[in-house]
Length: 91
Length: 417
Image (cartoon, rainbow over all chains, first blue to last red; front, side):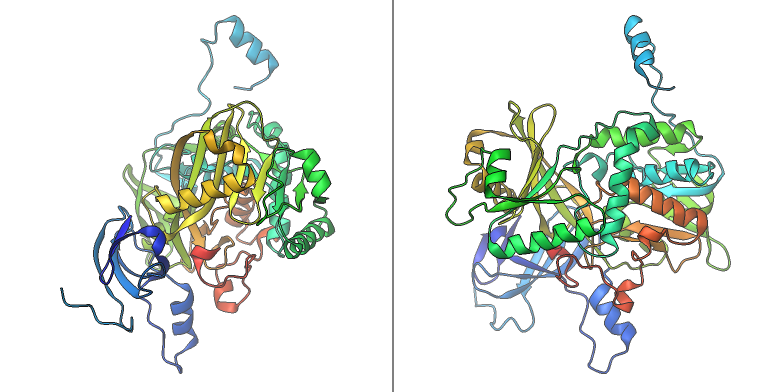
């Protein structure tokens, strides 16, 4: 598996660290216990196309949002995650 | 048929032409008292305990491929009971005791070999942690010995003891630990369960649940038709989330890929199971001579049953740090299995919020050693509708109540357990 970092180009997997599913959104401070439980512990654990956060610690140290198929490991898109701290440079 | 020295002699005298099939490949009936989804070690063991201990013999085990084609046939065959937290310690020792009588119970040679498991330590802090774990085991009646450097050198003299960065200082040894032949465990449970009337149904993939007006599960829909069931138990490891989703459930589980490796065969070298404490590397030697080894999971969600190079490199580096002499041994095979990584690294054996549906999941990468124990406690739950005393903490709601069983203290990040 190789990931094409939008800042650094195609790099080998060893440069990246996995956080997990990008779908769960941190509930607001006053959220119910159910919402927090759901966010922290429950996962869709999708078999197929999924969106997830990866960290390019061995390169530009940006957080990336990667669309990947968990059945085939095929990556369809990589983009800077919101709050990654940098805009994608002009090509 | 019953296996014995006499059956062996009889078969030998007739040129081994008259062996009967080990178990019966059944076609599905309309209805069973209990349907187990998943024909791996855990599912088959559950069926056997249901039939032998709890008197429920109208049982089917449904397997989407052939039995033992998932993680039961993909693991590194290690058995041990060296866990440190209440809930795990007693459960894995229950399982260990069942390993010790498995061959007699099943009338099948599962090649249980208690050749010892040693976890090496490489620092003072790690020695203290291992001493604590060993004491926890001994307080609970489980064998454990803390070995110093001299004792390790005597036992496994071929290690690299001159490693300046990660010097071997000693190890925690469980002599009753060891290995078992993973495929034979599957066939042994199939053999014994089948003899008691359990139907083992292969090429039978579950595609949904039948529910009544109250939402109770009344059966399963499969690639071989509808099958009615009084109760349905899931023992599908890495596919847990997919099967649970058919009943509208979301689980505290992520599926990850774990790789395992076998080298070409070499002469007898490694006496038992060894683990490298400064990285993640565990190794034993099979009876055929191959080194069987593994390490960390790859770390990303996957259903692909294959891994990637960085972990392969990391595992091999661990092996080289421990015994540089294996550097010229060639890697023969490598494969991946899908682990049901739970949010605290411990299993879940419990009823689900869906009436009639029972869950056995969350084994992370430690399910093989749990096979007999898992079968017993899951059968107990299915038969009695209450948890076995040694599995009472493996509750599905512990993530909500906070009663986590987190051996590594990593929190709700499955790829770190």
